[in-house]
Length: 451
Image 1 (tube, one colour):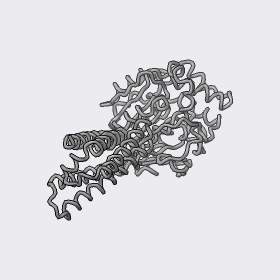
Image 2 (tube, rainbow, N blue to C red; image 1 turned 90 degrees about the vertical axis):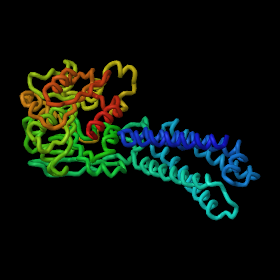
Image 3 (cartoon, rainbow, N blue to C red; image 1 turned 120 degrees about the horizontal axis):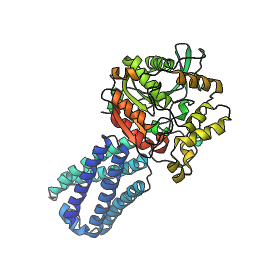
Image 4 (tube, helix red, strand yellow; image 1 turned 30 degrees about the vertical axis):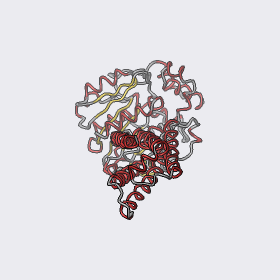
């Protein structure tokens, strides 16, 4: 029985490691870490406990140990059970990759000393010991080494546990953007932040930076922190304030909408090495399309999320959305609450009464006159529908099927007009998809960028 328990442990551990690597390199590293913790530590630890505690005499004979030391076997057995319990608890309570990685690291160290002990016994014992002890030494050390790799990968990922706290009181994490920096772009000083890559994978160093273009009336603090963390695993992410918003000034005064694409191109030249993947949300999705049309040399891959190509061909927002967007007379808090409600479908708001907690409260200033200038630029833009066929960047169009600000039909038209464009449509999602389900959006974008 001891033999079969040992083989079962090797089998379960091997399967866990296989799927761990599958998910680790398949864009879902948290899933890979959790699988290894649950199987290669949790299940294997329980099997080892059963083998050592209940079949210690048979196991000792099999490996050439002293069979009259059940106290020693119990110590070893319950040590395995302790590691197994911690790993299963870390996975069951969704403590995140760091906590799970620490249990993997502890068990890897434990197995390493066990493997070295087996090897020492094999080479130094005067009494002939079974050859399987040598095989046990090699297998144990191999498992310990692979688990050490997973532990290292785990502690270098942002902790995936979602904490129900106000965003302004969130503690800094590994994926939190650096402080605000400024760079001169054309006539203005642009405020921006960077984060990532947070993954230990050397391939991340070769990835293009990802520049995020914010929507109307928003600042870089408005991006979903969870989405930023997901995207920053594999690449540097650059967020910035559009002209006249937050940390970016606007010496020009009134400006055409195309200026936003020119500003972004200048930022990419200044801080992203001249070329970057680009993701734009809402108005930023429009600017991203304009950027790909007018400055193709700076765009790697293109993601337009809840955007359109402007002009009269685009389907407009609903009447309720237009009213809130264009009305700057209300105090900032009231206007913010009205906008926030429209980001989520009514069914979602009903099912999640605390939906406002998912929206980060911007700390930056947005002056009403600058919002007016931005709205005027959007309204006066003739659009680039007739030029979408010239886009050569690999393109992903993202939409929520219940979007009130940019109806999903716009996404269908964009995919039809842009050569080779892909569509990611989310059922039950509104304009605020990145707050509703940042993981689903982050996975879709990361999968596209990592192709």
